[in-house]
Image (tube, rainbow, N blue to C red; front, side, top):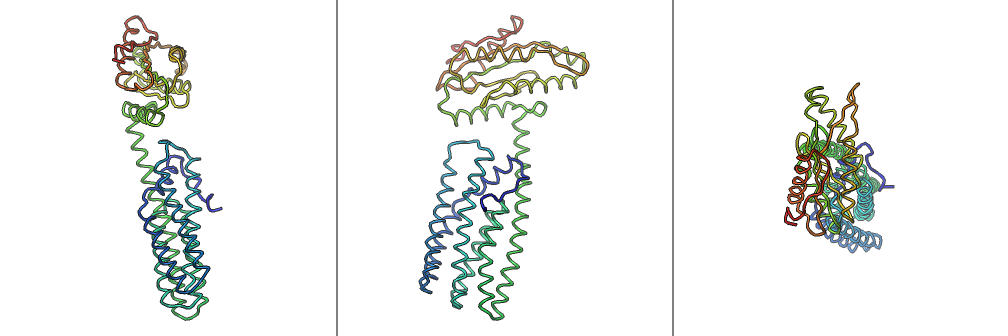
Length: 373
């Protein structure tokens, strides 16, 4: 099935970006649809061909459906999506576009069957215009793009050969040559686009993530928090937990910085293990961390999570043959619905953190009024 053609070797993050690029520009689709309908009507009426007329109507409907899909994609609610959703969009796009390629083939082949030379010139122009558009816009999905240009081209080749004559043989050979060149161009464009996207994603990750632990950094925390709020306006309360490590410096002094780095990586794994779907974790300093509880129904949930997080962090770490135990000072702030300013939440949580640190460590809730909530 055409909709199932895809590269399974692409990482998920690259795959979803490539699929999104299919829907990146609506102007070529908006131009191709009316152009096809105009040429199709001209050929169908000139040849008095019911088959060409049916193909023209079908192609117009498919073109409108493709444009509608592109508009719907741009308006989709979810700012973050994964491979399954990308696969659904790709399947719909490929089915509609390959169906449209079949209607192009019918319209382009009709003048050859009727042996109408002037209309054959128009038909070849339509064919090459469609194929050049596929190569330019859809090469990022090679299996679908190759199927589309092949579907549109081979019926014209067969019709030209059956028409006889040296000129038609030359035309058929030219179409085959260009088809082969188009397939190679599609593969080249896909490889180049994949490399560029991979580089872009790597640079984005380096800019938004802590290179040691893999957690978000300050920039990543702000961007992810903003996306979370934008995509989930219905969220009830939000809690922000700020904490830093007690007795971490002696670990570096005694065991060396590589051991300290190892402990931080192990700590990041523990933090991620207690997160729920939608929660956010970030390292914003040497031993300073932030966790955002995306949606809580009651304030007690934040307190329970804070204590669980503290117990998780304070459990012994195995560093080679040694068992190392550290402490934590943690403060958290709860924001009611409709009031989600990250800076205010961080300031309130920080106040509670330093209050607990002065008291010897532990976990405490911040005073919302201190941050102006």
